[in-house]
Image 1: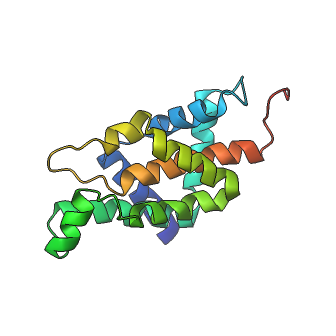
Image 2: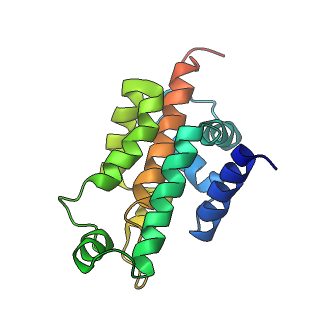
Length: 165
């Protein structure tokens, strides 16, 4: 197995360990796109999510963010940084900055999609954002939202708008 294949597999393993499936993300993509692409299917959304996840810079962001969440759970970092990350402090925006590295792959529409997903917190993003004792999801909720936003932008870039069959 090559380094790139190991990285991709590690990313998928981490997402799975944190309870996130491709289908979970695809449901958010579907909700973002169904008004613009009425005949879109969950399966098509899943395919776009998987294409986003093939990009190395996306894999780097996902692995980094999830491992940061896990490191906080394990008690690593200074007490002050652990506290800031663990409670997902409102003015701590590094989690969103990491997520923006994903949405920027697909331009400004990715950014606006992410803003919407981050504000509305639907589906798996809402589940991840809720406080679970012993679990830190400060980075993963934004990363998952960014993946969905990027996949929705990818669909828009593919030209699947309304009135096209």
